[in-house]
Image 1 (cartoon, rainbow, N blue to C red):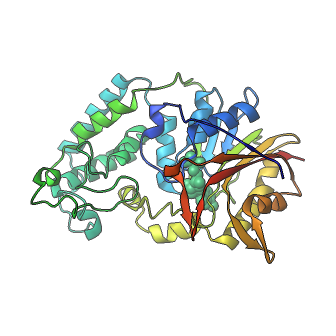
Image 2 (image 1 turned 60 degrees about the vertical axis):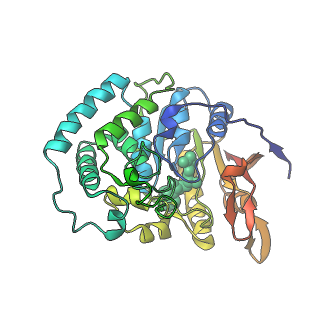
Image 3 (image 1 turned 60 degrees about the horizontal axis):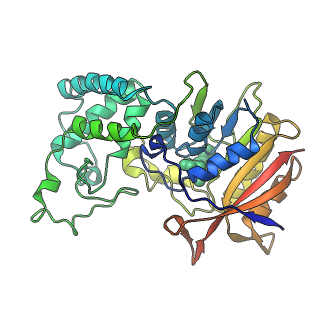
Amino acid sequence: MNIKKLDFEDKEKNSINSLSPYIGKMRIDLAKYLIKHYSEENSIIYDPFAGSGTVLLEGWALGHEVIGNDLNYYAYVLTMGKLNPYETFEKAEEKMLRYKSLAERRAKIEDITSIPEWIKSFYNEETLKEICSWVYYLKRYKEWFLLSCLMGILHHQRPGFLSYPASHGAPYLRSNKYPIEFYPEMYQYKNVYEKLYNKVKRSYKNVPNFNYTLSRRMFNKDATTIRFKNKHFSTIITSPPYMKSLTYARDNRLRLWFLGEDDWITLDKKISPEKNMFIEMMQKCFEKWAKLQETGDKCIIVIGDINIIYNSKKTSLFEILINLSKNYYTCVETLCDPLPEAKKVVKGNARIKQEIIVVFERK
Ligand SMILES: C[S@@+](CC[C@H](N)C(=O)[O-])C[C@H]1O[C@@H](n2cnc3c(N)ncnc32)[C@H](O)[C@@H]1O
């Protein structure tokens, strides 16, 4: 099969895209390329496995209505945050002041004994109480943008973050590297408002000209069962989770805990599927998407370039997708996007060196 190679430099700088980390994010330039090449003006873009909302945010920035979905509640919150920034930093500032007085005056938690030890191990007690209070109010009043910014500063070793020294992507303490005896300042109380203010300010550094009248919707459902009434999605662009190469709940377990989801193990069984579950899930998705699309509509899937045993034969994942979709879709093009060194994922002994982009057309 002829696979065309893409070549990007990741030049894009949209600071709203960096509110908070997410593993397995699509490259921004890839998302933009796919939207520009495979969608019509005014087409609604649907991403059923939206993750951190890269496709949706770029789709919106390029003037499309967007609809997304993800079963991971953290992905839902983060995407809602990206699709609903305040129009100016000044508006965000006003909101922050309102929540500052609420969260600091009417703290939602006085006693932290019921908080799991592993959470407590990341924070100074006063900082932890304050974070819980902020999360409570921001979630209650559906302040997705501020909540996403807060998720983005929960853990790291840099001064702008709220935890004891820790990593930023997945939560691991770095107290061996930064022991309290030598770095006492890293273990002191940190004021949430101050850190959040700076984070929000950074988020407004490079904001595209968004059209706020366009509709942006996001759901927190299973992509195989979500229902839409009388909807037509002329463009689907998505990157499904594949073969447990990434653990979306485990890596975000600290953020998920603050958001009220403490069973990350059960969640990962659903959102980081093994081979058979993945195949079944994709089969159901193609059936579902076929009902939402009309002849000639595009469905674009971005997937890691790996081989698995399928029907007793070593087969590449994208060929399996072509086979699973064949009753409804024709594969009209395949592209590949070599991953930059930092984004390569280890799967067993193999490294996923590139992503394959399969362009399907509804029959
Ligand atoms: C590769 S990631 C998507 C990354 C996204 N393109 C981005 O740029 O951030 C796949 C996503 O699928 C979600 N997911 C897994 N199984 C799902 C299901 N059955 N229904 C909905 N979402 C699911 C995971 O939570 C994960 O966020």
